[in-house]
Length: 209
Figure 1 (cartoon, rainbow, N blue to C red):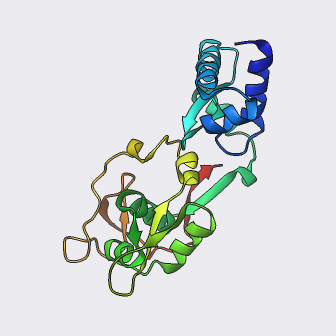
Figure 2 (cartoon, helix red, strand yellow):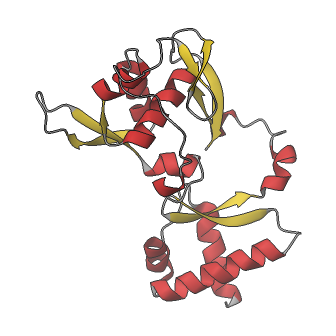
């Protein structure tokens, strides 16, 4: 890798607010994708092998970006970065998990799993770019289908949906669905502990943007 090419690659990755795909990097750098892939590999290895560097190259959401090293999180968390966090309520996390694991899924199907009305929570997730419409289901009324977005993958550090852990999700209504107000534990399964009815304002988690 020439110093000039490395500098260009690093500058593009640093300046971009979203992960850059291989095709996009190749377009911006005016180089064949195979060449850029080699540059990325060499640059990533260089960062990983140098303990003096505070960032690493990661592949997420079908693209590449720079992020701080996990072992430096103690220092990073001391920064006050309210504009860099997206606060997710209990209801939002629950609804998002159902969409992620069952997509494409309709609102009625989400509500059948959760046992509570989910229109406002689903709209909030859509407004914040975490879910999007994915056509309509071939069923009476042709309800809208929803799926997760590239931003969802980016925020949770996933290359693709294949990297999602595979927890047991509650079955739909009539097949062992949890009771309304019963809170999920960290891996998405009911833990039997009662909780207030989910609401958008019940902020319990933050995801760094």
